Image 1 (tube, each protein chain N blue to C red):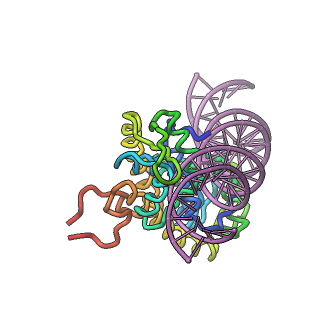
Image 2 (image 1 turned 180 degrees about the vertical axis):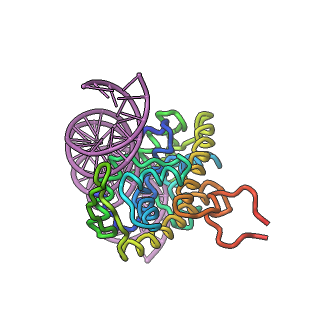
Image 3 (image 1 turned 135 degrees about the vertical axis):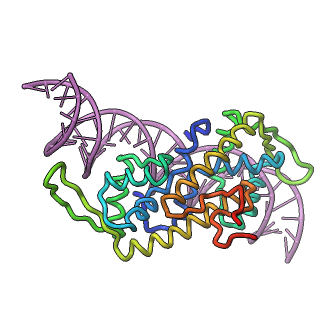
Length: 124
Length: 124
DNA sequence: ACAATATACATCGTAGTCTTAGGTATATCA
DNA sequence: TGATATACCTAAGACTACGATGTATATTGT
């Protein structure tokens, strides 16, 4: 029922999960639990992808197929499913970065911020 | 079912509707239809709030109550419901701007963009 | 030995949000 | 008369996230 009065950190993050996952994987293969921790770390704890969003998203990404996975038994500790970006995944990440820049610039424009999101050329 | 392969302009915009509406209304009272057009205009057609999202959002904002409305009969054309920001709406907008900056900076950080969202001081 | 914590996977129910499509009505223009 | 623009509103369906729960392994503390 919308809940405007809530902390909108949670509202705003909707739809960002796939691009965050793909971006972490662009640094190299990883597994679900580590991906979630890396997103938290890189964002200085500002973003947190819960497991109820993470694992479904990974399965959809694998069906796309933007990532591939292998099940790896560890010598110590629970087994892991290691995800690797496919070529399509790399392409999708590049496109999603552009979408994000367009989107954030557009929101900044409506909010009255003329600096325009992610500047590629620094003004004098 | 998630649909990662889709145009993610649509995925990313989720959750941003209330802040966009509040921001437009901070320039002065307006009505639903005009608010939607203004969001499109300010974003250079990058953002479009459909009526099926707009009117429910306005009703929730009014229930908060972050906006107030009056029904105004026009001398020509259909009547309009004019929305005005309340004091709570102004405060909420300020808080939402800060949330948006934190969120966009965090996403940029995960995406490997070190410029950090909305710079307030331009580098030399 | 037992409990607590951390790692690591996965699924379900619930709730919230958007899109698409439809409906009502007024006014202008061809 | 019909098309277009304005202006409101709602409903059905799809999508996404959150919180809780469950399984299992290994380490650490008491």
